[in-house]
Length: 283
Ligand code: SAM
Image (tube, rainbow, N blue to C red):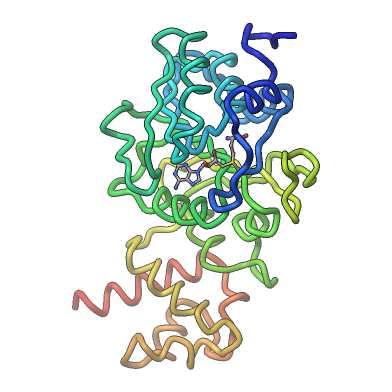
């Protein structure tokens, strides 16, 4: 029986094209088209929008995005075995899907797609975290992307939306929430995937704010926060020694006690600290 888009069900696609999941590529597929449609609706109205999908695999989420009205989808897939299946999806939605075979870490999506771009991805954990870090530090703000809708292991998703005061709070939370709204939009048990991964997953949705919540230089903030959380058990007067000079005075000016640990420090305070560091360098 064909699905709503006239294409075969995903189990059949996988059988026809011999897409046995490869662990090395983090392949845990979503085969329920109702579920992929739900994920495709997370960014909001996609009518006529540009969408970048990373890791389309057999095309379940791709079909959801196109059915939701995306005007143009650019899909980057590393596994050449998936290309014939994706070509069938492209044929069902003429002129709306472009597939690039390659590593998403190396392809320049902006050479193919005009902003604003909604980014949607169900990716292996390590690739997803690396791409998220890059998307969070674009050359300009507001960024070229209109939203990020990304599947992660639940534990990573919790780290992105974490608040100060707990183990999950770290560099990812600060960099994500400093200039984005970040929320967990959907939680999925392992059985939602074929084959099921070992842990639960969650879809994180991020929208860029027009401006950061508190001013700071992005590179300085990133390095200060990285240094602070690298030795998260230590007091900041010790973990931030690498900043040189009078670290305690810098902390005091940012309203941070020198005996505090990184996970107790609010984003606003990290931004103040980054401003202090930048002012010291420029004076
Ligand atoms: N989007 C599909 C779905 O939801 O069923 C597949 C998801 S599967 C978790 C991850 C997909 O990302 C696989 O198709 C895999 O081949 C692809 N992939 C892995 N690493 C990649 C990379 N560096 N660049 C592009 N695609 C990659």
